[in-house]
Length: 183
Image 1: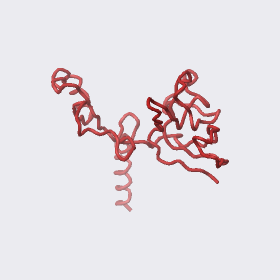
Image 2: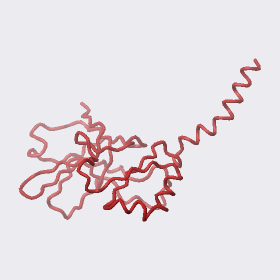
Image 3: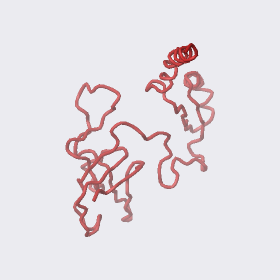
Image 4: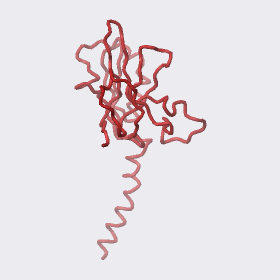
């Protein structure tokens, strides 16, 4: 019984340390990619970079024009963490266009996991293919809202396409983990 009590006290003593390792103020992924035009910036801004390193960040310096540098892999951005609160969105706000979506109507909502974005409504070369529902909003879930969020409802674009010169069409969606159609 004494061993069990000692084990319990040891766990209770270490618990605050374990919990602090996974707080929002202390993220577990501390990697930072620093893109510079000239590696001399590393020494001219050494105070700033040293302050980041002293706070536990692992800095990786690369030249911005490095041909081996790749921020994408297999068509997706190479980000460290995409999990977060409220990142799964059900939406049926699709564009009504047989040219873009085909003639088969998608009747069920689409489950989208990713990051919403905004498009300039004055730009005639950009089309929203999938928008968020009218009740959706985009804000930091870890802070209290002091004012209404700037990106709300159908202004949140989940999937967009953009036509550029020479009639090339670019399909834009942020790093999407899953897009499901519910039937």
